[in-house]
Length: 303
Image (cartoon, rainbow, N blue to C red; front, top):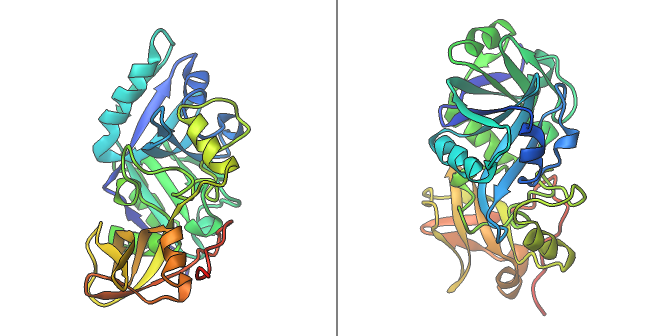
């Protein structure tokens, strides 16, 4: 039996950017270099504040000459308004689509959709299917007009699952999910692992918030990290303090069952004994982990 599942992600939606200036308009704003984007290659990026703080993250793909942005459904209109603030006289039309987003996940998800390689994309009926550009193991996304994709995914041999199943899957890969794990007007890209997850380019030219983001990288100023945790005990709420004894070393973000993400202060973690130190979040015991894909190391105990 094929080891691949699919589910509707009701919390996701799609924007379309069309017009002669759509590509250069978005290229000047976001963290990702759109020159890597093609009908056969999707990308992942973000729009920041001028101070380099998180506003929106999204997947990007091409349909003809149009740019499609897949992001949080409840913030689609807010993203459209923010983009329109920058539009001025540019020939760009920004519209919300009545589309659905599905996730395909599991060992054979790419095979079922005939996709190979991080970010690989293809037409899927009237929509687009693409492998998650962040991570090879993260499966695929399918964006399509409402009611179109589900039956086609079942016909391809994928097993119907729930959004909660995908949520548990992505937590196991330490992948953030928009506002569940990133704080608007506060989170920094490198603290949120966007470089390791192919969400920011430092050789693309300017983007909104580039100065702080580049300074954080080149001056090695990453003081926090969004990290996966294993949870033993009652599930802690988001923002529950992560405690090493009496010392707060971080805060929980999203969690499900025995998996979660937490934003951790690296200096406090070292002072508290490093990775080996037992931590608590509310009534639960929490063990920090280093993601398998990490391009960074975590501090040992301070001496």
